[in-house]
Image (cartoon, rainbow, N blue to C red; front, side, top):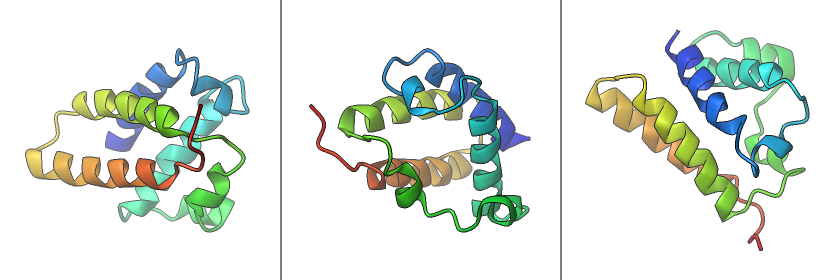
Length: 114
């Protein structure tokens, strides 16, 4: 439930972001929400539905078709920060989750940008 709430809040921001929204192939963000929710659940020890359906996460490879520059990274982090803040997690859990999300975002930058 926590990851569903996180992902829903995150994609509310993405839906109106002029840089990030065009990176999503489906007009409806529902499939992207589902994929991210499954990924986060699996990463944090939940069901393995993501790998069963999509194989190994290979995050960098899956993001290579998109120009992820520092601006896109920062926008992603801004929307994710707002989403994390809606959860009201205990400080240790919030810090652990945010540390992972921030490291993941930085690792996906694949172009210097404009």
